[in-house]
Image (cartoon, rainbow, N blue to C red; front, top):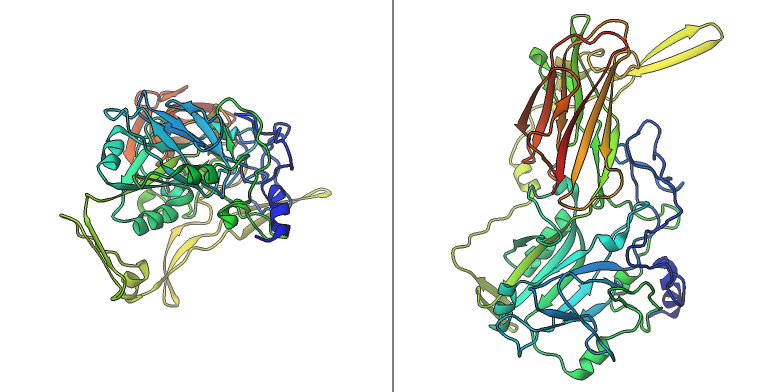
Length: 519
């Protein structure tokens, strides 16, 4: 390895050389960093300063702060009574039980040891853990509290001792591609894949790979265990300092994250997801007065004013709840694998499995384009003149469907999507603020205010929940008589709707609340 890169490694990892005093178990990335809204008009509970080199996306109110965490927190999810040793080849190695949390430096391959196995007390397993990354903490997020699950069940142990080789690809899930299923740190989501290549591909397509766990192979000898026990790479439970590693990373491109010095680090979206506001497809009132463009995580407020149906949206808040998902593969005895090197033949046979894959472009190429559909960007401008002052306001332009060179219809008239201060203002809040764990409940609060000079009627508030959020039945409440309904959305969550039929006079305010559970 290049000596210059070796010396720059602690800088790339955001660590000083020598004793690492900034790594208490449960320490935050920057305890002194205050958290302010990342862009004007975003509001919500997120606070944080935006680095000058990092642009703020339109829907992301909480960009990453600082470098990735110097270690990946890993929680042992093993059967009760089983013990795990992080570096069995080091002198004085100590065994820990279930729920023990370690901190592993990215870029290294670790040999672990499982003892006191259920039904096999005299046997031991030696899993191999490749750590390929870590989370990017937001201000106030304690990265040691969000641990990747090292999930080894009793059935896994039995299969490994029977000769199976098990691979588990652990990745930080992209909330936009979240699986609509509940999981907890004690019971992580685990999905079977058809092969190791498929497991890596599916994990990469749906998130960011942070670790790979393999077990069921041969038992290493003492020399191998000593060689893989590198000092300064594992933060043991209860420790709050980690020294400088005694050897460079085995996976240097993982251990030393590189990025453009001008553009800065690439923004990550796996730790947090925006909630509220309006996403890619703009919300609007379509034909027949029906609401359109309400996507998951969007919030809308429909109302009638001056005989017209209008709609507005809320601010964007940020929910930070990193979730790890596992893709697993079992080789033998679940199938037959043969490999002939001379002829270059690879064959995998499994029972009752038929898999067909095709790229998205293959299906698109079979369809002939018959027209063109586009949405215009907000561009209409209203300018008001006053004495010694100029005040300008903008409203979105109409959305049209275009067939060839001829406009065939308008979906939204220019004044149907209201963004003017005079009208209805909707704000969204999430309590408690900050990062949350899976299984915790959040209180969603929608506040609306009629800032116009005329009453509004037939108000409908709609909040389309993300796949990571589950509505708590019976938790909805409002300060005015209202009808509450839930409708399934396209990510297998629900749209929570509050129908408030009565008139809302000028300068009047209202509030609705409901609870959600973080999946």
